[in-house]
Image (cartoon, rainbow, N blue to C red; front, side):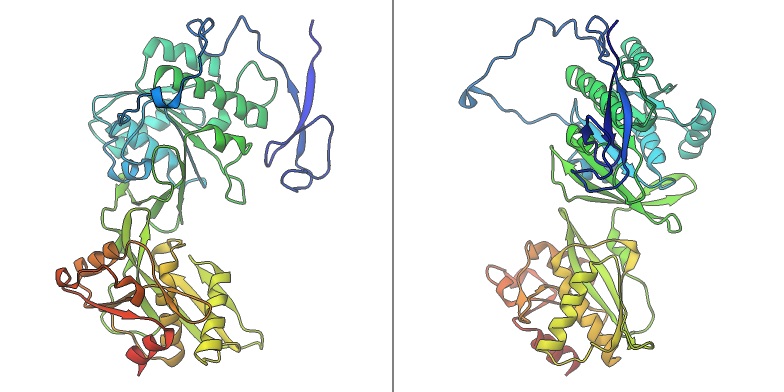
Amino acid sequence: MAKTKSAYFCQSCGYESAKWLGKCPSCNQWNTFVEEVIEKADAKVPSWKTSNNTTRSNKPSQISTITSSEEERMLTGDQELDRVLGGGLVPGSVTLIGGEPGIGKSTLMLQLALNIDGKKVLYISGEESEQQIKMRAQRITEVPKADCYILTETSTQNIFKQIEVLEPQIVIVDSIQTLHSAHIDSTPGSVSQVRECTAELLRFAKETDTPVFLIGHITKDGAIAGPKILEHMVDTVLQFEGDRHHIYRILRSIKNRFGAAAELGIYAMNNTGLREVSNPSEILLSQRDEELSGIAISATLEGARPMLIETQALVSTAAYGTPQRSATGFDTRRMNMLLAVLEKRCGFKLSARDVFLNIAGGIKVEDPAIDLAIVVAIISSHEDIAVSSKNCFAAEVGLSGEIRAVNRIDQRIMESERLGFDKIFISRYNLKGLIMDKYKIEVVGISKIEDVFAILFG
């Protein structure tokens, strides 16, 4: 009888060690090592049938002789999900979806399983019973478009037996942390179990060209639970974000081998599930009756989608001597940099003032084109002078106070015009190559931050 082997794994990053360590040398986390028993699988009992591949041997091919073709994509019927995936599902792809508990991951995947046209879908749940899933399915839709099957199972060996009999076209696993393989002698959700179960599903997806969705839990830090290698193994990693106290949810692409890794999909949660939001600019702009200070509109880009976002700033006297700096939906360090630029280059004394910044709609923005709208909102609140709601801004602010150009300015201008804005402020260096005759909106090119304040605040 073979001797049982054990090793120590870091629960944070998956680092393997022969002995217990107090501090992980890979991720520098303390007290994360746990002992797990390693039991090699019997070669005669494979986890996924490999009889067709036992004698196959791949040979190297010269790159000039390899023929390339456009991969066929499967439309899911969900325009937001198709956009984030890069145009639809790729056969044989493995997609990992992570998010906080109760954010709507299972609802999103069940909607996909019910609404994709004419496909046989297997929904595997290790967390809910068949009756619970049926109740949610009745709330989501009355007549499913897909041939959907529900399997409540956690053993990968039993799952693959049912897959061989059913032969589904799409497989959804909820969640990967609940599965366990008999080839690994450790509890479900451990590093080795998550890695082995994902590897088995990955082999199945690639050998049968079946798309597989994996729902993953996240840690308290917001990272997907399990070893970091999990994100490297799969083809696409999606993050489902949002505040459970608000109705809007954001599906963000973190990694995508078949498309852009910066796409964004927006949903609204209601009684019948998740509703697609086709025009996010409408929810990110508040409808107000009068002009208020401290508000400016920015034309940003998330992936290939232009969006107009409302930035809100509040500048007040520091009550306790030490000024506070707080930003929601924006990097606080970049906000501090912009405040330093305003004080150094424009003479605004903000070092003794509290500054609070908020991006409306609960969205998190990383586009540098929002810089100009932020500084305008801060000065508008500081001087208590309202900026016209028909003006919008799209430019980056440099450390010397210059207004820098941003990419794809044409899409930003057209989106601003479509939503009824009268004027857009951009960098003067973005004017090169623009055909002004095709725009009805007034395009104002500026080169320094002082020019903006001279136009807006006199």
